[in-house]
Length: 490
Ligand code: C2E
Ligand code: MG
Ligand code: MG
Image (cartoon, rainbow, N blue to C red; front, side, top):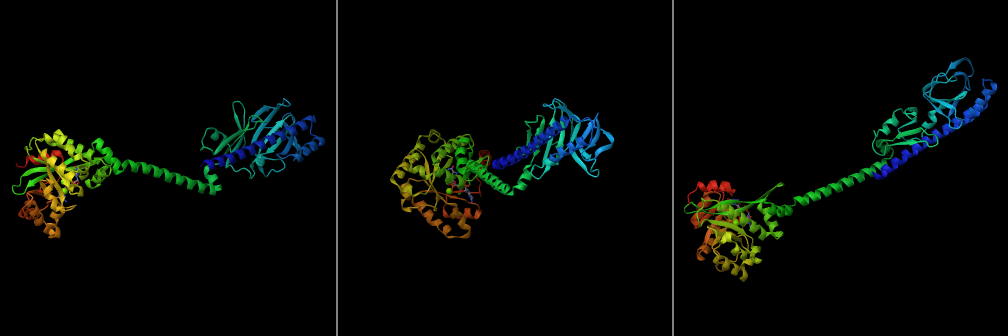
């Protein structure tokens, strides 16, 4: 666009220079002819006067006819010779003083002049009268193919008025009032002939029509600029909305909240505890645990997240007077925090250690949990009063031999085993084996993802102690959980 604007500007400058050159040339021609003829000091139109007038016309480029006046009466012209009847001159549009001779110059624009010689043809001319002579100046000389501007005008400006002389009337006024787009118009005044100016306009549309190559290049560049700025905007938006940024910010701004899903004793049907399950919502929408949990892990935010969770969950549940003491609150702990040792810090969090509830830490199976350091951490946590539960049992790393050494209290059968019950799949057939281990190592057992009575009945028969799932209740926000608890017997 910059280069196109430069080119358009140059074209307009060329046109306006060309027109001003014509103005100066026409003015010079006018001055030269009138000075010479007036210097002849003829006070009547005789054959000598006519010959001199015709001689002057012969060399002229702009002047197409010359007339001779006595007392405001046209007496003869180069075209028609001596007139049978004199013609009274029309008043001029403006009168200016010729600086060289200090005599008045009368100028009139005539849109349709019928020359005495060519009465069938009307011409657009400027009539200039000085002394005994007038000149008919043809403005078509300005109007040849050289000018590319679609609109132009020549004017004469006196101190308080403007007079049209050639081209399209009104153009100068429009350009002066900035009626056009940038770069598509110009005003230029003659320095040799003060007061004479031109205004020209070459619209962008016309310019591009004549310079299609430039248009194509400009369009390509504009679209490239558009695409790249679009990409930039998209990129920054995407960056802002990227899950990792949302999670990071959400942790600071409180976009995480916790829902509570009851855990039921299968034998009595009573609520014995709940699991706290994280939820996320910010101005861009909701993120699900399978979206934000891996990110929290990847961004090393696990411990920070667990701290926020503990603070929020224990504070919220402590407000529920309906909850009996020894109510079991299960919270999920990242296995990587066992590996880093962060998990040992749980013993130093008073809201946990001083709580009236039993705090159960759910940890999914992981290779690391088998290490001596991990075993030491677990032992210390149990001594500090925590319950430990293997989450999603049967889905991850299972070293059944070591179950005994883990100091765990509970085993949580993954919901895929429960869901398999209805279809009598391979996983479901393993439930009795799992229960054998549970009994052998004196664990309690929770089955998660119980949705139907049938599942519940089979699990109960297999000896599963507790159940969690939509059959009882979906995870609920605190207020709904409270309402739910009030309707339950403990
Ligand atoms: P999880 O600890 O095994 O949690 C149980 C998942 O089973 C939850 O999914 C729960 O909504 C879903 N569930 C419960 N009952 C049913 C049922 O009857 N049918 C079905 N189909 N699903 C049921 P959710 O809430 O999407 O959580 C997914 C996992 O995200 C959790 O699995 C846990 O590993 C992790 N998670 C959730 N909140 C936290 C948290 O605060 N901290 C940590 N470390 N992990 C969390
Ligand atoms: Mg869990
Ligand atoms: Mg689970």
